[in-house]
Length: 222
Ligand SMILES: C[S@@+](CC[C@H](N)C(=O)[O-])C[C@H]1O[C@@H](n2cnc3c(N)ncnc32)[C@H](O)[C@@H]1O
Image 1 (spheres, rainbow, N blue to C red):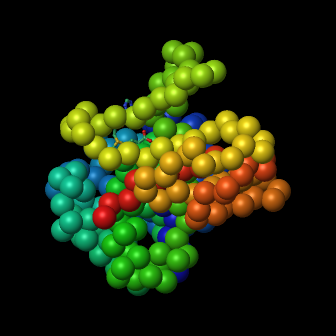
Image 2 (image 1 turned 120 degrees about the horizontal axis):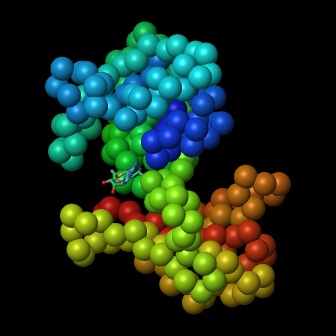
């Protein structure tokens, strides 16, 4: 059993990663969310991207519709999880697809929380594949950076004003003491990510050894 949580990027199928494309090709079937009660994909951007990829890269996989009313209800996520888990009766490897990047306001983590609790072996073998966000794409379109030099940037949901947040700390100085990074939630250290000597630590390193270090203080629901 293998589950890929595949980020599809911001709508242009050419903005998918090679890793995401390989995951889709490696899957026996692809689970695609749809807001239509009749499981149609007429208005689905995710379906359009997957179809374009299949066409351009010459592969064809069965599509499993996942009814997703976007009402943020536990029962809706549970139904999607049930669809995924039931599909493992027929298929060995599955992909679930999401727009943009899975790390940003995506269904992926609602589903993974349930899967972790109800079928831990699927959770353990699951791979989350990151993607290009809508705001990275927007920034590139107008040739304006999201942050540069001494600036930073915020992502703020419009449906609510006061919300807890995750903080990403970047651009440390080698040798700096991290005492002034005051963690609020659950902080991780990422060093040389995806390069030789990669380290992922579920705590804040006391001092910075590498310029390629970032800290993420992840918001975690209590
Ligand atoms: C549920 S969030 C998903 C975000 C997505 N995971 C990402 O990485 O960008 C949906 C919101 O992202 C923004 N969004 C996503 N795709 C977009 C696009 N192609 N154009 C404009 N905004 C987009 C809109 O603000 C939309 O309400």
